[in-house]
Length: 93
Image 1 (spheres, one colour):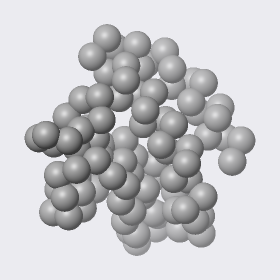
Image 2: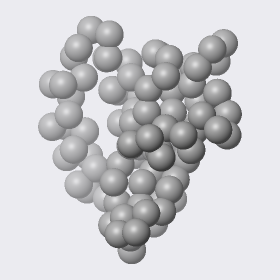
Image 3: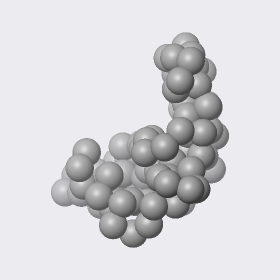
C-alpha cells in the first residue's frame, strides 16, 4: 500500500493515475489529490490489483468511473453499497 501511495505523492499532489508493476501483479490507481486541487475528498487512493498479463491502459477508464463513485460517496458512507455494482461493471471488461 505504501508503494502505491508513494508513487502518487512523490510525483505530484494533484489528482491523477499511476501504475506500478510488482513481482506477481500490476496495480493501477487513482489519487484524489491534496491541497488546492483534489477530486471530492483529499488524500485518497482507489486502486485495482491486476494480473501481470493485464494491460493497465485497459482499466483506466473504468477506474475513473469507480473512483468518482467511491470518492463522491466517502463522506456519507454510501460507497459501500455501490461496491457490488462497481464490481459488476469491472467484471465486464
